[in-house]
Structures are given as structure tokens and as C-alpha cells.
Length: 429
Ligand SMILES: [Ca+2]
Ligand SMILES: [Ca+2]
Image 1 (cartoon, rainbow, N blue to C red):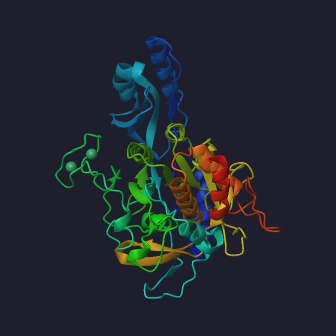
Image 2: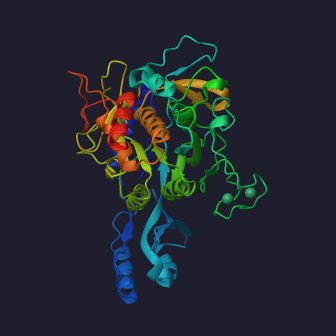
Image 3: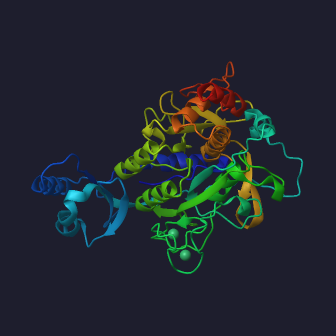
């Protein structure tokens, strides 16, 4: 499985589409063990499943295995090779194991910024926020306060002036002492956690910081504002600066987000191929009441026909977001789908934060998804008792359907935060 960086500039569009076509040639190996069969039956099933592997590609990491346990939790385990892992680890723990998948490499295609923005330029029009009606809900006092949003992405610049005040602090953890003070399984996760087990990169990648800024940039510390400027970001990173990562790290990052008690998870990435572990962790989070906001992808595809994960999981607690522009037109590069894409949100020439105190505009469904994630945070700050299903329904019911520009999505419409708040008030009096 490869992961696409969904923030692209126009010049990268063609290269990205070419790359995405290659993805469908990649299949990956997993076994699925279900039910409560006797141990020997399970071992036989494990054995036959391993023997039946048909998709050992160059992307597979054959010494690492993503294990989902019967309690729903995940770990990534090491082994010498699949056969050895089957005989030793799986046979030993088979009664506690729900599912095993060989880990695989994933690669971010580096996003290209459309434009560097001078932070002294005060004249920029936040067209996206104007269109979805943020100022009206801010005026009512709803700014995403007390809502945590996980950004599962590349590493975020937590020192950016407009982000540093918006990073959720794990107050039970002492930073930089090499110990897991709160015993949540993560050492020094004071601000978040980076799952970069295979990384040797010292580069930075602006993708995660850009997504975080769209959601929560602090307007008191600079010239822009996030959609939900009082929400808090939980960084759960799994893609390094060079754009490399593993599926196992993605699964662990998602599991970590849930442990930090976020309400919303933004996933502006995706790929195709066997992704059973990813589907399983998404299901776990949806059932825990988390709203999963996912970018539809940038290859110009109909995702109802051409699979793109996690965009097409279509879980009860999931919203998949296509991109639209100032005129509510859907760019040719935006993935869509009447069944699996739910709505559009602003995703063209989107201003946000980048490493080193910089600002960039970017294009992509990566930028559209965090508009919806920020909107969800606002709605939850207005109605803290709402469920993820109610927040989703309010967002989908509240869309603007612009005559003649209906998007090829489930709702045919574009995010309208102001109307979604009205819908939520009907759902949660
Ligand atoms: Ca900890
Ligand atoms: Ca510590």
C-alpha cells in the first residue's frame, strides 16, 4: 500500500494520477482469523492462510507483522520471516489473536505548495471560511473549545506561532525524561507521538502542519485562523519528512489518537491494496464514538468504482470529503463518488501554516477534509453530548446544494457550518 499526499499543486496532478494508477497493482498479504474456533483449528487456519499468500510484493516488510488482538488493540511485532512468525509467535498466541497482516511500506508523494504566502500580507480573503459561515458560529461563542482533534499525518511543527498554543498537552506526562510517566504505553507523549519506526529522515514535510492549521490555527498569534480556533490538536504522526512510513505505524497512530480521547480524527491520506488492519482500526474508532474525517483523494477517480482506502470504508462514524473551489466547482483532480464521498469542502488555494513559521497555500482534498474536521469540532463545542452519528448527520443535512454545480457526492452539496449547527440543534435539543 502506498499513501498519497493529498495536498497537491496543479503541476503535480499528472504525476500523481500516474502514480495512483500503479497503486492498483499492489496487493498485500493478510490473514483473517475470526470466531472462536479451537486452537488447532486456528493454527490450521493461520497455516493455510499464510500458505495461500498471493501478494508478497516489494512493499511488504516480511519481518514485521501487524497484529490485532481479541480485545481490539493492535501491535506491530517483529519476526525473522513469515513462516517463522507463524510457527513461533502466532502459534503461541493464537487464542488471543484476531488478525495478522504483514506490515508494508507506504510512501507519501510529496505535496507541492501552490504558493508561499508572506505573513505580512493582510489582504488575503479566507474564501473557504466565508463560504461555510464560520464567523456566524464564532459569534455565538462556538470555536471548538474542549474538543480534541487528532491529525494523523506527517510530523507537525508544534513550535509554529499559530499552532503551538493549540497543541493538546498530556498533563500527566513529563516531557523529555525518557519515561512513560502516565503509563499509557507511550514514552514522553507530552504533546503527541510520532510513529516513525522505519524513519531515518531528517527532512520536514509541511503537509501535517498545513492540515493542523486549517483546523485550529490560533488567530491571536498570527494573521490567519483555523476553522475551530479553540479546538486542540493531538499530533499522531506516521509519515516522515521524506514521505515514508508503514501501514503498521498508521494503525498505531490511529490507536494512539483514540487513547488521547479525541472526538475527531483527520486522515488526509490514502491508498489501495490489502488494508484489513486499517479497516479494523477504523471500525474500532468509529464504534468508540470518534468521527473519522477522510480525504477522498486527488486522482480524479470515482471511488465508488476505483477503491481508495480509507476513503471508501463508509463506516457509520466516517465522513469522506471531496474538494470544491470558490465557485463550488469540483476540480478535475478531486476524487468523488455518489456513495462513498459525502460532500465537498473548500480545497483550492487554501492558506495555512507550514514549518518554520511559514505559510503556504495548497490544493487538495487533504485541505478539504480538515475544514470538515474543524466544523465537527465547532459542532461538538456547541453540543458536547452529541454522538459522532449526530455530528455526521448534522454536517450532511446542513450542506449547500448549489444549482448547476451539484457535486458527485452523496449529498451533492458543500459544507455549510452555520446550517449544520441549525441541524444539530434539531437533532440534539
Ligand atoms: Ca505516556
Ligand atoms: Ca515522560
